[in-house]
Image (cartoon, rainbow, N blue to C red; front, side, top):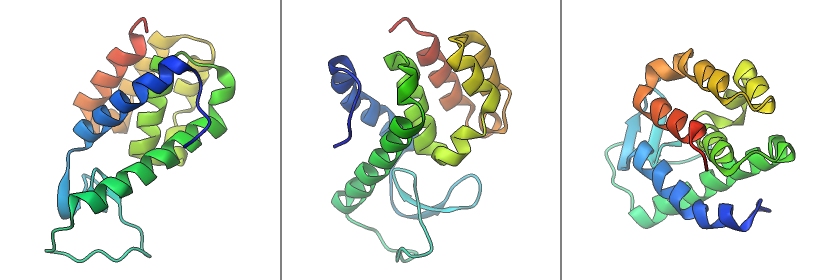
Length: 153
């Protein structure tokens, strides 16, 4: 696994995975996400080089492996881009979940939010989360992540 922050975070890693799975939902066959992208499992974006067939159900075990791969990609994205800031666990969890959902490039587009996080201004960072197209697309998820961001973990 990846090079992680502290022991408390390790304990929360399984809870973070469970929360992401719950927020993503699960489908064993191909579907289009809100933007029309081909998706399967726990929100796995299907790339051009991946062979998934429409109208076919895939084993949950196979799709759980995809989830773990996607989660590790998000974790590596966090470690590479944000670990150096030594954020509290709640902030790290929110960023990892954003990276899981949006990809590292999508998350990095939240320039003002990221600036406020570096300043430890969580209120303004949460405002920037709400003031986004992402919020319009997944308001329940963003609201729940804002609650986590503002919590005293």
